[in-house]
Length: 326
Image (tube, rainbow, N blue to C red; front, side):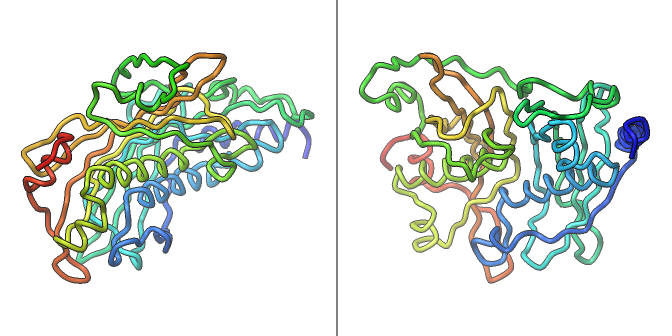
């Protein structure tokens, strides 16, 4: 195929991104952790797959534009609301199209997932922002087509839905984790970014942040005496997530040490609570924030192998969320 013909194909593909796409897809078996319900992380994976399918159907396949033009397809913001739970054997009917707020120079998509019950129910709505990050590694790429140029960036960064709170920490202190949580209703830890949290050779991808958000909840409640298994064994309670959002603010690189901070921000009517996740790396002697996110949790009691219902927090849970002893 000549360069001119390929460029014409890309022009048509970018125009095709404005048309809606659809996909039928099942949740991955890995996401069925308690009974047959699918956790929020794997619901977001369905959203991600729907967006990737939308790009492929239009003709902007992530593999091809990387191999030809050195453009890495990255989700830099994902804001998802879960209205109905998915079960392991469900089929998600996904619809993707440009978001109503999308400008001509951005890849901002609206995603809807429906699930078949007695009728086709709207189960998930999500807003997803994609950036095409240029990777100079390898070289030899063809000249970037003008149609793709508006979406190409040299560094990943998105604007969050809130202003991240500045944090001060003495990076020479013996325990930086304590520095990051001092005076906050928060839990934090440090870990080394592994290669399996990354893609396109070196950068942590959105799924890595989703994994960290799930782990942060698990660590916080375990630290405060109300671990997932404790509440399962003693009260038949499970956590449920109606809303989550993660925004990439800067790039995080493979094998960097990352600090993850989960802060409990508010409790709503004793039935849900909001937490904020912030991630940092130390680079050139400074603390650099790479992402911020928020997640809403509630608790449900397992009624049988298929059904659950929301419950109000008891004294023990309220105390844990406030960081005190019941």
